[in-house]
Image 1: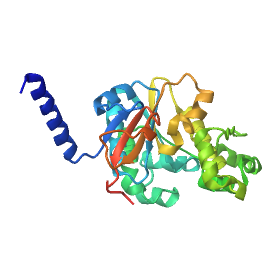
Image 2: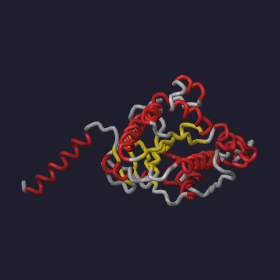
Image 3: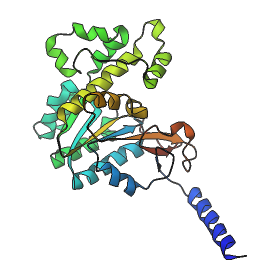
Image 4: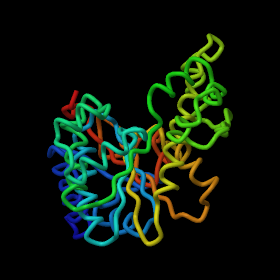
Length: 284
């Protein structure tokens, strides 16, 4: 056996061993090339705005969000924001971060997701301990529900006081964006539901509060469901309309049975795609 053949065989053996060992995740760039966590973080930390698109019940995504926040704050002035907290609960969030209300009082006054305690509380508590600003970016769900039933035009009927909790009206909606087109087909717009417009009300509002709270020489790290930033549309699209100067990078999380090669369907979904095994334990 010559030297080349021996090295080739060793390479194949090492690949087989690596693929047979349990792995919690693998990271790829938009083109499907494997990227190390260290290299990804080296690039992310240079951005103005990083979107972490998660699967809401994925424990690996939530763990990585906390890990990233802890690393970001060592190198940049950090601002955190999340879809999982609604804009009209910002006062309650601030009171909790400042230590003026307890865990119990926060849970009683803010509309927290059912998986808040396991999945988002660690990041919120990290922000509290480090005195990092945390922005509740999402539109209150009651307004998104109204849009779902009646379309974006219903927001014009809201009292002026309540309009402070959503994006500036009128919200620009482009139904030709592929992600909105897909939602529209799924939601059956012809049957009277405005699912894509409801999604746009969330995307535009999250973009609005990100832009309102982002600061020069800071990194804004935003947590949201992957679909809200899929293919750099959704929130990203709305942010870029008003702040094309911002350097934005996106992360998506996807599930595959085999995590050692990125499936073609997921390529270009984000700048970095974190692949989780389909059999990974879920938080709910």
